[in-house]
Image 1: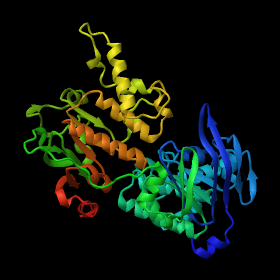
Image 2 (image 1 turned 45 degrees about the vertical axis):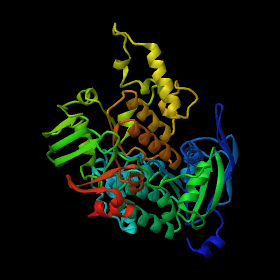
Image 3 (image 1 turned 180 degrees about the horizontal axis):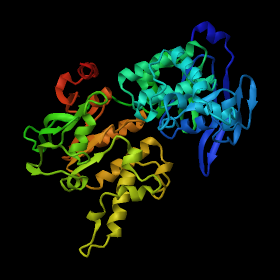
Length: 503
C-alpha cells in the first residue's frame, strides 16, 4: 500500500474496545484495531494472547461481551457469521474448511452457490467464475483436479479463490505458511501482493517473524488479551517484535554445549532404504548431541524419522541403539528400544484432544507405572503428571483440562511431556516448534538442550534454519531421498542451510 493511499484511506474495518471473557479467563481486554483498504496487517503474539479469539469475533463466530465492529463506517454490534460474509469478510483457517473429495472448481464456487440459495448446482455454469479468479491471480490450478490430491500450498490458493468468488474485501489468514516450503511461501506472498494491489485488505496472523517483516505494511502485537503496540512494520525489527510479544529479551543466537570427546554413540543407522522415500541413509547420534535433519518438503526427511520409529519400517539397513542392533518393525519395537517420536501433526497424530492433559502425559508410559502385581501405581502416575505439568510450564488451570482447550505452544508441550515420561534414550522431534510462538519456541529449545545435557540423543527435523542454527551440533541435509550434505561448527549458518536445501 502506498503512503498516499494510507494518508487518504478511511478504515475498511475497525474493531473498537472489544472484550471477551470465557468463564474466569479474560481472552480479550479492550482491543481496538483498524484495517486500511489494500493493506496487509499482521497480528502477532504468543499462543494464548487472544489472536484466535479476535479472529472469531471479527468473523462472527464469537459474540463479544463489549465493543463493536465497524465495516465501511457501519457498526455491527451483533456480528454473526452470515453478516460477516455479506459484509465482505472471509477467514481462511489453518484447515481451510474445504471439501477434499470435490474438485478445485467445485470448492471455489460451491459456497457462493449455497449462500445465494441456489437449489440446483450447475458445474458448467459455475466454471467461468472460478476460471476468471484463477486467471486474474495468474495461478496454475486445474479446475478438475480433486482437492484432496493437491499440495497444502494449492489448497491454500484454492481457499483464497473461494474467498474472492464470495466477493471478499477483507481476508483474514490464520497461520497461512505453517506447512509451506520457502518456494511456496514466496508464491503465496506474490498472490497476497496482487490482492493488495486490487484493494483487498488482508489480516495476516503468523508466528514467523521474518515473514511478518517481509509481507506486512502494519503490525499489531498482542499480549494477554491486549494490544501492546501498533505501527508501521518498518518501525520494528525481529528482536523488538519478539521482546514486545513476550515482555522479555530473547536470545536466538547459536547456543550449543561442548560434546565430550569420547561420548558414546546412542543411535547408529546404516544403509536404511525405503523404496520411493529414501535410499542408503547412514548416520550416528551421540549421547548429549542434538542432530538436525533438514530438507525441502518431500525430500524424505519425515520418512526417515518414521522408519526409525517403526511407522513405516525400512526395507533394508540396520539400526543400533547403544551398540546393540534392534529390529524395528512396529512403533512398540521403537518404544521398547528407547526411542520416542514427536510427530509433525501433533493434533491428529500426537494427542487425544478430548482427553485431559494428565491422560495424555502418561498415555505412552503406563507400563512403567505398574506395581510388581501389574496394577497401576497411582502415586507414581500422579508424581509423573505433576512433575512434567509444572516442569514444562504447561499453561492451563489444572492437568484435568482437556487438550483441545490449549494453545498450540501448550499442546506441543503436552506431546513433549508424553514422550519425556517414557525416559527415552533417543528423542526424535519432527517440526517441534511449527505453529508455536517465539516465546514458546525459545522455551522448547531450552528444554531440548537440557535433556541433551542429561545424556539424551535428540534429533530435530525442521526446515526452520534459525531453529537449527540455534540448537544443533550438526545438521544433515536430505535431498531426493539421499543425504546430500553434513554441516558442522562454522558451516551451520542460516545462509548455508538454505543454500544446501535448495541445491
